[in-house]
Length: 384
Image (tube, rainbow, N blue to C red; front, side, top):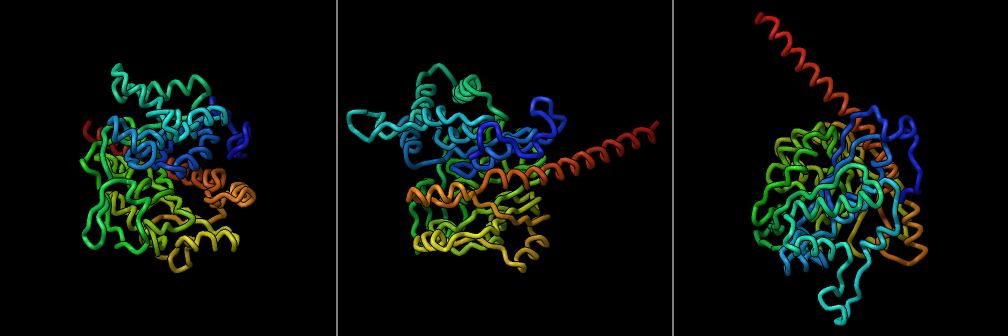
């Protein structure tokens, strides 16, 4: 996590409120991956929006969604907290505080405060779903300023349908969490029913000089955010797409995947986009004991070989960027406290490279727009 008041060197060139940069970025995803990217980017004097998947069918989110018909709120709450410019640990503790799983607490048992707040706004009958989301976001802005705007990918409820190579279909995002490595590989996912993307999310993506499809659950978060109608078209209109590839494969979703597998499947869901602007891949060391712990659960590092890098840059992306993207402070803390989930991306290191790519795409986009304006002007002069 970033230190309160800390800012990367490039950010000190201009104060955020007086920025002469016009660079816009949009982060798409959910879970812990999207917030990791957002937290690094908001330290720079650029405009950062986020688009969060809303198709969670597991845990508190899934239960409230099924029981009361509301949008699953957990991923969206995490994204909102990531937009807070100066970290507010008390606010995070408040919204993520969870009632004990005890019958004494009735319907609140096992649910975090943030999810209950969403339920109260929607269930009151006083507000539309869009109004409830706006109230929730603005309430946090009043507590501590939010940089950029978080958007839900859709205001409509839908389930993820996973189709496997053997032709079988499985309903719900929760299925992805509990798949066995021995099951047939995933062929593709879709939404049932098909839903349209929220207009604010579509506008944020198509205006972005760089859209970042955040790492995380590859099918449940990354790909799921691309599925609502109008989102693939919005991504095609963005200045470019960058993808920080996962640090490790996931036995339930991406067992045996190479970097090319990840990128090929990502592009399959945005058919109008031929190549990514950038792929970011970790080449930092992973301690043997940590790697062994993951291997015991069927999870392995995602590494890029020189041959794969050559093929990726020839066919799938303009640039492959490698670096040490492991959050070593997080890893050491998890090791010292004996907790699982020892590997996370380093928000600051990701942001440094993503901002450079975004600035390049910004310049390229403005140059293309200037060329079109000049051609239009010349055409008008010839007609005189």
